[in-house]
Image (cartoon, rainbow, N blue to C red):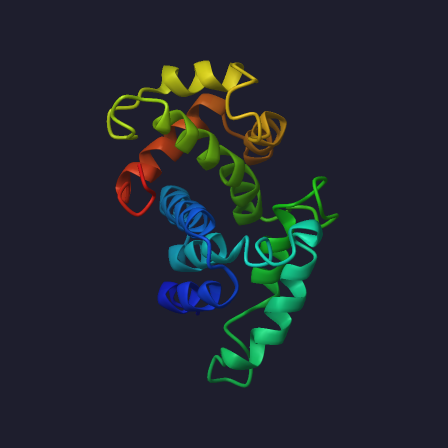
Amino acid sequence: VMKIEQAKELLSKYVKGETLVRHCTTVSVAMKYWAELLGESDPEFWECVGMLHDIDFEQYPNEHCVKAKDILEKEKPNYPDGNGGSLITDEMIHAIQSHGWKICCDVEPTAQMEKVLYTVDELTGLIFACAMARPSKSVMDMELKSVTKIFKTLNFAAGCNREVIKAGAQMMGRDLDDVIWNCVLAMRTQHEACGV
């Protein structure tokens, strides 16, 4: 299975911007947290998917999630698994593409990991914006009500799609407040890497 250091190395070939690298790092932190919370057997796989989910965004913003497949297919030979295959699996590619469902891509999130990615991608962005508006600029002293209030303030962090977050929480079969709070807790686990 791909290791997180390999995912970081791969991302660095295609993403140079500090803001996008931080976002990918934050999503990967949240994915690992959720994998552990849900009792998944391979949290590092989820972490790698989170790290690589926006691999095409910097170079191909207008073909986001579509170009990801081309990039990852091309990179497969560079990440051999030792058994004649690749550490970049079809499962990984499908998951990465699916976070753009109905936004920029028609690959539907069906696996649990894909539903989580679909949700936390937008949600971590909203929580980050919420943290930046606080005097502490941190998630460490953030309360749930701070985020839920901003969630309802549609002109704040307007780029964060609330409908996607709501649909994602529903797909995950979890209460929206529960999903929001667990993402705050996830970001606390590596708040420095997440920039909050």
